[in-house]
Structures are given as C-alpha cells and as structure tokens.
Length: 213
Image (tube, rainbow, N blue to C red):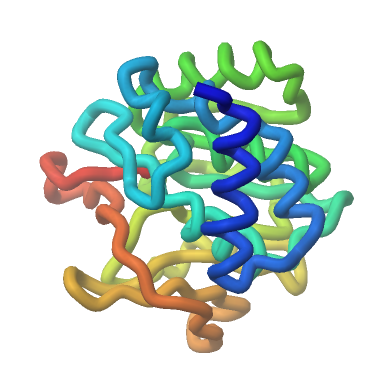
C-alpha cells in the first residue's frame, strides 16, 4: 500500500470536502504519518472515513472530525494547549505541529507510553505527556486551549480555571444520538460548530464508561 498516496487522498477527498480549508491544518495532516498512530493490524484502514479501534474499547476519530476540530480552534503557533484524552496520539501530533506546546493527559498509561514513542519516532517535540484523570487533574499552568476528545453531558466549571485570558474550551456535548462540537469561552457562552458522535469521558461514579478517542 502506498501510504503517501493514501494520506494525500484522505486530505484532498475527505477532509477538504468537509470544509476544512486551513492550509496549515491540511499540510499537517499531509505530513504527519497517520498510519503510524494506529495498531499495525489496522494500518490499511488508517485513512478510511471511519473510527478505528485503538484498544481499551476506544476509537480514533475519523479524519474529517479531526480536521474540523482543528479548524474550529483557530490555533496559533505561539499557543499552549491542554489535550484531555491522548488516545492514539495522532491528534496530539497534529496539535504539536500547529502550536508552541501541547500538554496531553490520558487515563490509560499504555496510551501515554505508546504516544511518547510514536512522537519520538516522528521527531515531534514540545509535548508533555502525563497519565492523569481529567476529574482529578491539577493544571500546572494556564492554557490558550483546552481540548476534550471525549463527550460530556455538561462541561464542568473547573475547566475555566485552566484557561488564560480569552482562552477556549473545545468539547463535544450531548448524548447518543445527538452531540454538538462546541467551543466555550465562558461557562454560559459557547458556539456550536458541527454535529458528531464520540464516546464519553469516564465519569468518577462510573469507571466502566469509555474515555479517550
């Protein structure tokens, strides 16, 4: 399989057709080797328009969702980002390509360890990786963006303590079958960007719920 050609087709035929037109995002998705962030058994499906299983009953987002997520954030090269839900590490790699620094956390230690190796293999630096639970996390600094890769019924207010002035939170709010991708600038102020479906973040009272994508 020609991965370079498949990656190019993914960007031009899937991501761009879903109104992702930001050149920096498209270039990042062309250059970051998505196939290296999926299980070896799934590599031939790395560029398919479908979620991919990555272990722990978790799934990698579809490329079009990752592209729309990134475009909605309007990221800048000098910004710092907190990603909640490292998962496969692919979105982490894209964020690191587009911003100054990414701090990513995941409840699964093996996801964190695997991502650390994948980023090293691709020469992607300026990433802090940490095993942590979102609901117990203590932010060491403030961020321009907080990005949650799993869904919630309601965004908890403590997240806004992690933001710089004029910072933003990306989160997918709702329940199956209706979820909205939103960006919050305050607890009562948000903009909806698109509809999608992702697994929920683990809640403290229910350890059996799926978490990261």
